[in-house]
Amino acid sequence: MRELIEKEQRVTIIPADFKFANKGTVTDVNEDGFTLKLDYPADGVLKNTYCEFYTDSKHGTLYFESYAKQISDNNTLEIANPAKHKFLQRRRFTRIKFIYDLTLSQAEKSHSITTLDISAGGMKFKTTENIDIEGLYDITLPLTDAMSIVCKYSPIRVERSDDGYYYHSGRFVFNNNHDRMTLIQYCTKRSIEINNK
Image (cartoon, rainbow, N blue to C red; front, side, top):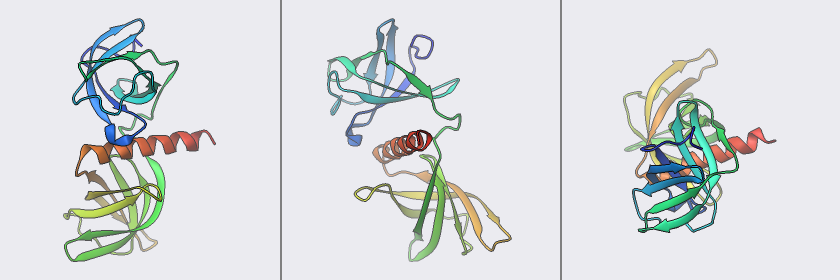
């Protein structure tokens, strides 16, 4: 990992339970792995139990699974070298097809939209309504039958097509980092599942 991970690099760690997602800074790299000092206590991270790791590199977003060999001071982890790794697409966030009929709302107004794709950064959708591109909107994203994320949507651009639809692209504004990390993991897992079909 020495050629992929270096000191001062920022790394996101996601244990099996999403709500314990955390970030940290690499403090040391050696032939057996690296040391990661977390921003918050290592709640939910178990010794010798696999977690997912993400970090930005010059080759794209690096993704791998590994485990903590040691946990000390409640926020310093000795991470084992992973058996394998992969680079996610160069786009900052993995984008996946996401077809749902949803509602975009602002104060008392609501708009019917059909999402086309999403990433942890934002989404693309189509609608027959002329939605104000200057607004900030509420939206609920259904990731599974049991889990949804509520966040804000900020439009960036809109195009009118000959088929009568307006095609919108924009970014998400999250209420908390947990929701953002949940969406990153969801999109990454779905992308891997689709590519492995």
